[in-house]
Length: 224
Length: 233
Image 1 (cartoon, each protein chain N blue to C red):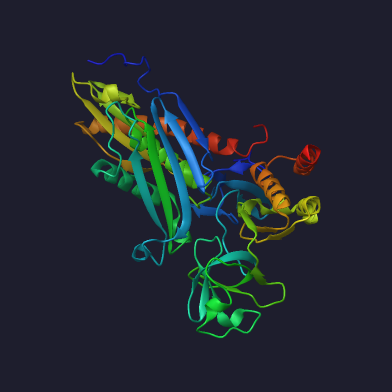
Image 2: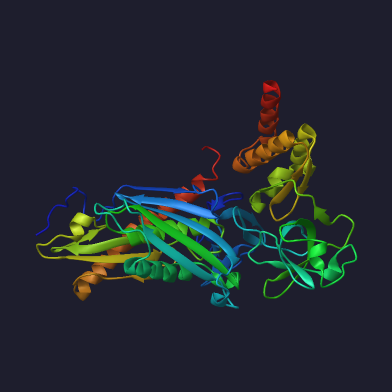
């Protein structure tokens, strides 16, 4: 497949090379390399690799995520972080002193938290932790979900896109690497921020997205 | 004798096809596939927590598939709900997909595949399987290959590709319907059923013809998936 080049979109099962030299997102069968995902191809001297363009969040150690408490037990909380599996937050891994057997006093079912994935087990189970000053329970404002594969586009180059949205709407925005985004601020401004985020999600593959978002903010300002 | 097809197609010609992905916002992946008057819509949710919990496998993920015909899909109203035929087709779709999806990559989780047939004119299990495999790829699941499925068969004395309902019910000489599903780039058969009577030699001819049709469907599937991320649209 000599005609395949960098940034080509490939589908599962597409032949990438006649040698078994695949990287991430590929598999080798009978000495040939095939794509495993519907994604974007990257070729370098070490071989081909494929980055998926869609898909659910896969927890990795060190990710900062936003999760929702789904269960309170006597010694831990069960947290839904938008991954295939629920994770656990132990009562020892929080940045306040938690008396066990009464954990619902601190965080209840439905509460949102900002936490870090700090351990992945061999069976893909994960633990989250809230140790550190930047992790906290989030007040109930608005959240929105976007595809985690599209997050780099929402953040932009060195945070350009997200800073644009923050400055235009004067909202606080917290991004979890699992694709959950927490927005806090004035009610109308929150709606505006969320519609900007949705615009980025729906049109994330087009070039010059910044201009389009700026245009949207200008249109809104003209109406007011 | 069956010398010319009812809709004037060639014997190895498929009905006009149409494919589209990413149409259901709440699903992780979705696809629509239409071939002639048969149309299937598939949605994939997951991988997610297994419910009920005792279905969980510690070494691999599981697929839960639900196939259903919408009440208005056939001339006589189809009773909504899961009947014996739906159960069988859900099972064959699950078996075919579990050969295509690399289930070992996400142990202890479940993929929920839902397929609805909004219009039926024979070959619904093939259309459903094609739509389901596109939806799985759209959901970002690791797969060995896409599945391309087509019905082939024998009507009277002639081997035909992609039968319609009218042809399936052909009386003079009898009609045989063989739904086949392939992993086209691996040349593997993942579904083969037979309804009717056929000799060994004819079955080989039918499978060969199905393979030709499956490759055409495969090209369309790839085009439909790639169209979502092209800048021209």
